[in-house]
Length: 283
Image (cartoon, rainbow, N blue to C red; front, top):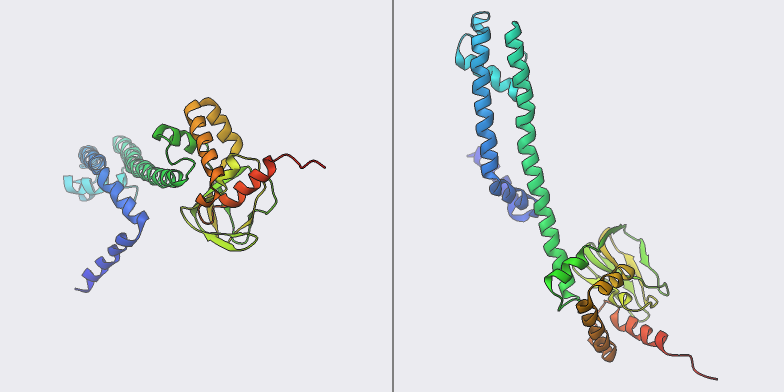
């Protein structure tokens, strides 16, 4: 009964996304992994039989039977190499070389399958998360799947440590940011706002060369995705439909700054944009 309690450890898979992803990968690649197992067993059986034929008469106590030779083959292909059985004939040594090389390949193959599939799973999950963040931005909410995918290719990953200042109030704004993990605090003139995973800020910087309306500081280690205005404008120049949607959205948001979401700095940056676009008063 106490041994069965150890199985409770595997309940961690319920609460660990990484563990669940790994289990999903193992299940999805089960056929390929089973194929590797069959090939390994076949190679072990072949090497065992060959070693028995080559060394069975020379070392009858160690390799005189197929099961004994099969044990040697499993140990050798598994790269364990206890050293309790060593070939002494030229043919036996040749079989050993074949078994060792086969063992390296049989270990590398399932590792490559699992690591590649796990990396694909992580990329797929990150893709879904990033897609969700982009789709929530009012500027991109009505874009097609192709257009959002084009924007995703422009995103740059960035990491800032706790206490590090990302942008300062009054700095020229040239990027918007998506928080993938962590938290930042935005110090506005009249309030402080905290943003965490899945939120965004600075989208008006993509449309106007405004000044930052607040200072953004990381409260803990934070990973972000940055979209530069220069890259974004280069994209909409190549995509007339996207450009038309952007300009329509700009006019709507400039007409009603109350539409801005809490904490994304949109209202303050729109006001700054309107102020910067107005001609200076005549004396």
